[in-house]
Amino acid sequence: MDCAISVIVPIFNAEKWLLRCLNRILHQPFHSFELLLVNDGSTDQSGALCEEFAASDSRIKVLHKPNGGTSSAKNAGLQAASGKYVVFLDADDAIDESYFVKLYATAEEHACDIVMSGYETVPNKLSVVPGFQLHTLMNGKQFVLSSPSVHSGNDLCFVWRSLFLRDMLKKNEVLFHEGLTVGEDTIFHLQALLSAKRVYAIPDPLYFYTVNNLDSLMSCPYKPYLEKSLSLQYELRQRLSEKSGLLAHKHYKKDMAAYHIRSILGMLLRNVRNSPIPVSKSDVARVINLNMITRSTKELSFTYACPGFKEYLYYLAIKFKWSAVLFRWEFHPPAVASFLSFGILGRSKRMNNRTFR
Image 1: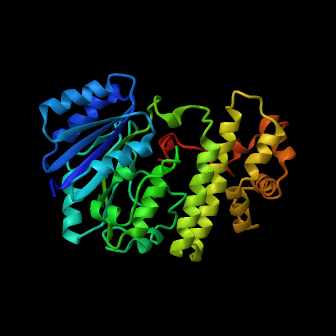
Image 2: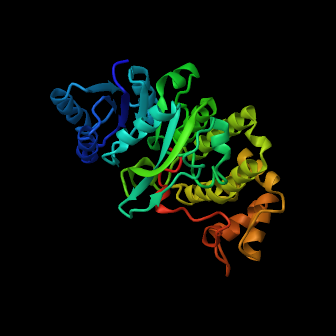
Image 3: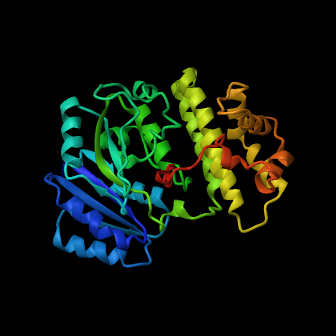
């Protein structure tokens, strides 16, 4: 084992953020790590900056590859890693000075496969604590079920909040799904957790998550790949959940259904609204007939919790596939407001720009 932790940073056109990110990593009081900078076909000066840092610190290795997306970049870093543990950091974020110290100490003390921490959003300084049971050693399935809202609370998102035992990932062939352009972190996290025998969560906000990065892919108003990627993410989430027996637990199953109605459907309709092509009734029909929406309304039946009667009518329109009505309400609203104004589909918070990573 060459070092305690392999730090993997996928990089694509991140030159304006790199100095802060790398300086925070290199000036940690914890020194037993290798830093793998994966330049994923950047067209700015990111690659050159990485090489400059590597020339001054033997712990840094730079991997240059053609652009293939963040999943392929993380997998390339994972393949090159030699540390006992692995962490994945984003180039536009920063870490607390005790990030490595606390995650590594916790992992070693409890012989963990995975340790998860809290994080803080930047610049609004919102501290987010893991929704899982804290300070308790559990297997991965117990850990997932310990969160009352593991889907709607985004507890499976963001691999940068976790430290992973590399041998556990390798043994169970846990990799990032390269067919996903959004949601790769969620599926990786779920697969890793379900493979883990010893998982532990601490509340400490050790990671600083930048939520106002307008250069982020998730900040683009229209994403042509979104519908396909979210549908694939749903199928993978459903498959992993069914295989592991998670769907036998009512709170897990109901929360997943509510999450796809309240959050994912709202995201898809916003994406349709932002399309450069004029929206038609068939666009709305296509979205509400997606497998993840149909399954979710079937699971929730008539018990979906809405704040008022109008919101419940909107939900019924989704459930019964009244696409013409939904199209009129959403894109040619009369005296009533659109779906997105009410809350049946939820309002996307700015902090969730990268919810599906």
